[in-house]
Amino acid sequence: MARTIGNKPGLHDLLTRFVISRRPLQTVAYEELRPSTDTKAYHSTAFVLHGLLGSARTWRSFSRTLLSNLSSPSGWRMVLVDLRNHGRSAEIEGLNPPHDLVNVANDLAHLIQTRGWAWPDVVLGHSFGGKVALQFAQSCVLGHYGDSAKLPKQLWVLDSLPGEVNPENRNKEVERVLHTLQSLPSSVPSRKWLMNHLTELGFSKSLSHWIGSNLKKHGDHETWAFDLDVAVQMFNSYQEKSYWPLLEHPPKDMEIAVVRGENSDRWDAEDIEQLESLANREGDGSEGKVSVHVLPESGHWVHVDNPKGLLEIVAPKITSLRP
Image 1 (cartoon, rainbow, N blue to C red):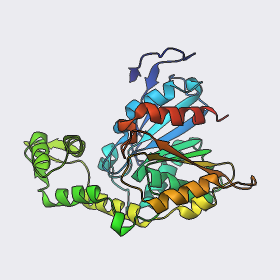
Image 2: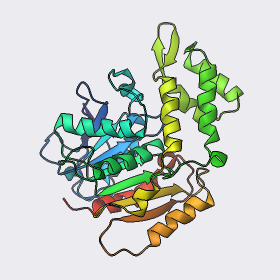
Image 3: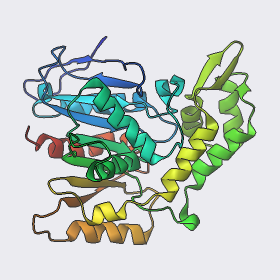
């Protein structure tokens, strides 16, 4: 199945046909975007990981634009993953507990190994997906994926706290969403009913629409496409896990690039200070590096609030990588 986007002035050698591939059995679901049907045309791969209660499709538009803005898009492909219990992966059996960051990252390694793919050059994750990216790199370092595993050259952590979430600064919005969903019946009359109900409770229309996108038709009613209890377990794992040691000693030849929304409410002063300190540290070449980027005019939803600004941060650095 091919999709088309328009050329942009100033871009050269731009191919505009994108191929979307589907998953094999026994792995998490994914979509693959590449400018050509020729599987030998690309030499580099980027994985894109969504946040909690998101899906691969929420990153399609940005990923297409990112791919088209690389200096040599024909050499790249984007693999947009539906993390376990999300999107089309919610229908897959056999993704066993515990439903934590370690096993979500293991799902990525299993997908790579099952398909016989080369290991990704770039892993880009938003919110929950940002910590999945960090766990994926950490598991590679620890040898959990075997001797053949190769670390990404770039790890993008998009508005995702690297450390444990301070109970006083926890994401009350997501907690409230999950608690509200737990109070609802397992099926609701319609998506419109749900959105009206959520807005009456004080949720914004955009947030209500995002939550409603997780419904699926079941007879005369709508049911959740995901397992709510599993989503709660995944959220708890996100809040409890810390990857500061990985940022303090990034693996050699890998850059961990952290993007913080200028107006995001996910960060406190101590986190920001620690990140800036790591980014400003002078290295001797024996370790990788950490870079920090502030996305202006953006809250937590970086790819929605300021996609152009995010593109201007990400595309040049990915383009700078050499096969």
